[in-house]
Length: 237
Image 1 (cartoon, rainbow, N blue to C red):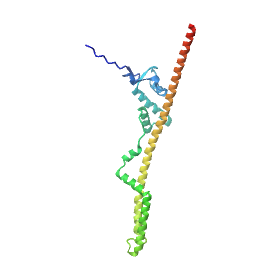
Image 2: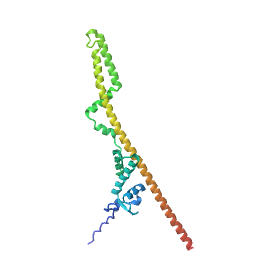
Image 3: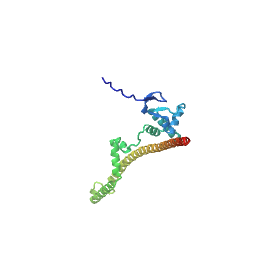
Image 4: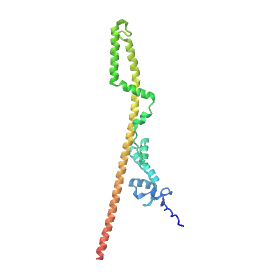
């Protein structure tokens, strides 16, 4: 009988920070982490060897702490927005939100009605229609004379206009208040996006500097090996 070939065992190793065992692909060599984050890890674990392996979960946790430290150092305190940005960077998530759709989804029926009334009250359609009604009102009552329903000096018209102004003013104020709330949500979203972009650019600069320094180091090692090989070849001749 032929034996079933055994499956290849997945190589594992222990995380230098937690001691837990992980698959080798779930571990990161601390030497490959960009210097800023590696320095933040060594601040809590100064005895880590140069070839220490760290789990990706711990790297994400320290990435969160690293960005929190940067935000706190530059702005004096860690706000809720700063915390959200740090977590999104650590978890590699996006912070862009559709503020218009989110705001529209939570508006009540009364808020929708007041916004529509405010929009109509500030349009040329309302101005023209209101002007036509005024001219018709005054013209009809002027032609009918003393038999009109609102003779000169048009007391009923003044009452209607006063009631309209009294109702229209708070509706417009409610709409403006909600517009301010919408602008605040939009500005908070813009702040999160700009802050994340700033930290991402800094992160990329550190990574590029780290990669370039490692590349130059490897090139120097290769050059030294080539020089040694050339010297050995000349020595044999």
